[in-house]
Length: 331
Image (cartoon, rainbow, N blue to C red; front, side, top):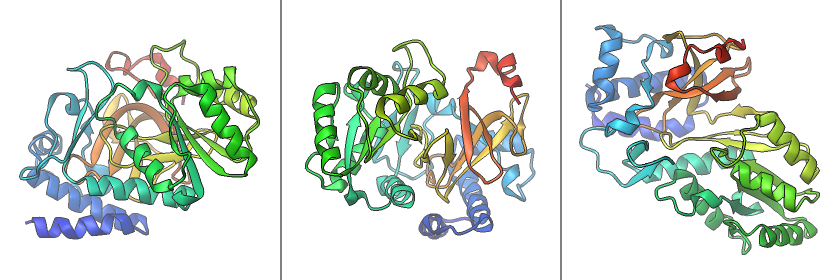
């Protein structure tokens, strides 16, 4: 039996993974735990497995992300410390019931350390206006904590005050202070248009978010506009979602790297149970081992591809209606 004692061991191991074999072993451990304890995942996975047991990581079923909109995805016997909600209207929102917030904190802090180093070297600025009215945003929770942990007096949220934000950036740039500016896409584009300036010590961290604000632009177009306005070589991006407790980062060109406890697989959109080889475009499946108590195995509605060196690219989204549409023929 895969008991709670066992799961404590798994929990202490996920943030110390050194290789693929360790990842696979922990993923299979978590699969067994989920089959015994998750009343949403277990019946779904059983339907797919038809009595078989996965021998390797490629045979583990992925739960469609839509389940987070209609079910309470949490393991039996676990209380809820926090509920993260996606954007969208009530009824169409994903709900992520988080049993242990300490796991989420450890995940994003360790990931930040891995990709960017010591948080106290940075001033963290946040341009996230559309989140002001939103309850339960996992992004706001993370950025708010990064702001606190940076211990810089100028770190903070600048919801829609672009002039004040620009003054702060100019002042800090003049002192050679390292900055990370987290921003939703449309707000960064507004900043680029109204207050372009040369940035030498600032990382622009785009967090997505264009819906309904202006005509959709391709990522390359957005990044080109931002690079020109701020005379900077690369635009960084953060890839996370309400339903995960981990995130990946891109330091430019839309190439993402994930921490050692998160892996991306690409499923064939016409045969969702089969996993494609590298460099093929398909649906993004994610194993997030930090998601111990909700579901670590998620089939998202994002399109992407995995590159040879385990980095990945996100190429857009598909809605259910066009899963077989011709936009997927870009191989």
